[in-house]
Length: 601
Image (cartoon, rainbow, N blue to C red):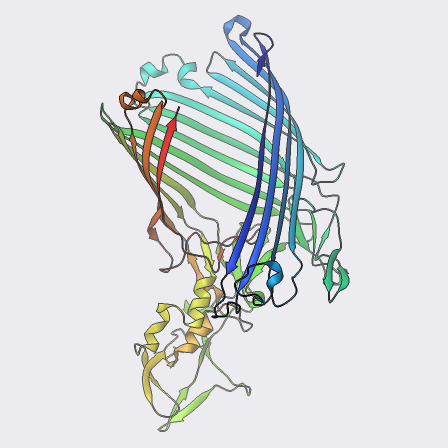
């Protein structure tokens, strides 16, 4: 930074992040010869990003009778990112015992997998800051970006913002005298626009080239790309209030907002006759409303001991306002095939709705039917002159229906910091309240009998069941519910009819997917840190170290409560494009403990 005059300075700065990571995976053979099931994998990841910017700032205080302060900043910025990832592996068992090399597989070396990501954004921006008597503030910003991921003519997007705030405890004379408990008060109002591009290589159609048996093959991608794609845009309004009470021992920050996003870059379905599955275009509009709050305070503050606490929370809802002309519903993705779980957006619905087959009900009770054979007659058998029905099935909805929504009602956390002389204890707990999640791990585990919940009948804790050969065992289950005519279901059938007919992973017959959807609320002890600040009188003797602290840290310690079945990971939601609220095959969270030394010289 250079000060050219007492009211003008210029700054130029930049940063470079360059990394080159090589990862090797060795699967050691399982036989004494050192060959069977042995494998070797090699991956290299090169990542380069640069950020360069330069700006000039004009500033002047005490304008127009010492009541107005002003500053104006204008600058340019250039962001560049270039990533390259390459990986390969052996194919087949090892040929040379315990030799880990790509050419040591029993089959020819496969083609390597490569991923490239290159992107550049050039920007110009400006900021205007005005203050009047240090209680009325106006900030206006303007920015224009030019992105390399959009075509010329569509790659420029401008987005302004403005923010107005009023410290009414300073602006209204005598207010603090009449309200001595009110230490600080500020009203704030803002308007902002934002723009964004898309991922590289998303707008031009390129042929997919593969090699099969030494012959080159070309094919079109599944998604038709459109070079006229425009930047995504959003507009938001925000209003809030900041309060400091009791000499700022209690502080409250409340904010409410509404935002509309439009020109969303989405994949829209096409007729199969077109040769493509989807087309990537600008379509749709989303509306987002919500509020955020932070309440912080210092209940105890003495010479040697203090306690600071902060509670934060946020609520947000996203609604689908508009889709492509003539389209009322858009499928974002599917999990577990045609009879699995689907997430769609529908005009007028909230984003994050899960669709799947559900139970049907009659007078509030689930409807069942007796399993039938190829002749459409109930499966039954007779023992000692009494007829028994072999199987029970759920009567499901004909089509997929809404069975949950992934958007939570509230997210937030609470932090506590206790200090006693040179020691401090930091405790963070965060939470998610509400929001539905489909747990695919639960569906698969229950349907295949791998969870402890399925052991009751197998261990003889079920209902008495008469088998066709006349033997009896406590392995039966009753579905409950009623038949379509309203008659209560009293049939006792083998437990497999219940578990395999209610829960499943891949299943072409259909199961009630709602049985594996749970309200996913939880609270977790996220972090605990005990820190000792070494007194200055000790470290100053070193004449080198200026500050030194020692900390014991534990993270992701345990869940204080969850509302889902034991053993499932509440935070193990899969990332499947725009799909939300779906879990499958997630690993359990792990606790971590560490020791930290922080020092300055």
